[in-house]
Image (tube, rainbow, N blue to C red; front, side):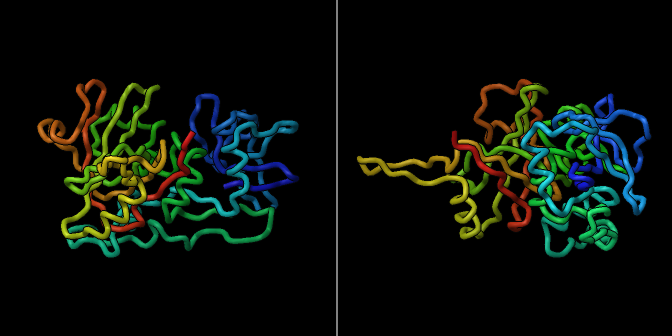
Amino acid sequence: MILKIEDRAGLLYAKDKGGNLIEAKDAANGTPYFCPICNCSMHPATTPKGERYFARSAGTQHTNSVCITYEAIKKKHTFAGMDPYTFILSLCRVTPRKDTKKDNPSSHSTGNSINTNDDSSVGVSHFSSLKQIDKEIDILDGGKMGNHNISDFVLTYKNAKSFFSGNAPLGARIVLCRFVRVDTKNHAFIFELFSKSAGLSATFRLEIKKNNDSVYRDLKDIFITYKEVENGTGHYVKNHRIQDVLIACDKWELLNRSQCRDICNKDHCNNCKGIFQAVYTNPKQIYLRSPEDR
C-alpha cells in the first residue's frame, strides 16, 4: 500500500502518537503520524485523483529494511471490508462445508481494487493468499482495518498479548508461529508462538488426516531430514535453525490439560495459553517465511 509521489514513499496506514494504526482516509491534516516500523515522520496528503495517503515528511528516510522492502511491492493489500472466517475458509477448503454459511463474494473479492500504472493513483486490493500477508503483515500488525482488528485475521507475536487477554476462542484464524518438531508417531507437526515481551506462549498442533501418508511425507521433508550416523542408527534434524510459518485453519480447537500432557514436552505450564489443534487440508493453508540458519 505504498504510493510514490515525487520520489517519496507513501503509505495507506501510519501510526498516530498513541501508537494506533490509522488509515489515510481517516487521518486529520496537521496531525503528526509515523511509519509503523521505523517511526519516521509522515503526514496525510492527497493524490490528484483525491485519494488519501501518507507521505514521508521532507528530509526523512525509512531506516528499517522492512520499510524499504515494503516500498518495492507493486501491489498492496488490505483486510478492510473482508470477513475473517470466509477468507480463512477459502484458504483451508476448496468448497465450504455444508454446515457453514454461504460465501459472501464481496468479503474477499478483488472487484473493488484499483489497478493502474498511474503513479498518482493508489493501487490496493484485498488479501487473497498467505504469501501476500507474509510480505505485508509487519507493516500492518497491531492495527485495525475496517471493522476488524488485524488479530481477527492473523495472530502474531505482536498482538498475542492483547488477543489472549480476552476470552474469545481462537476459532478460524491465521497463526504466525515457529516450527518446533514433528510427531512422527502420530503424523502431526508442532509449532509454537512465544513472545518474550508479552511473557506468554502457545502451542499449535497441525494434524495430518489418516491414510494421507504421501501428504505427511511431503510436509515432513520441508521441516526435517533424517541423518544417519556411523553405527547405522540415525535421527531427524531440522532443515533450518529457525523456521517461522503462517498457518491458516478454520477451526483451531483448544485441548484440555490431560491432552496437553500427552503432547507437550514442557515441564511447566507457566504463562502457556495451551495447545491448539487443527487438521491440515491443503497446501494453501501453510506458508514458510524466510528461514534463519545463523
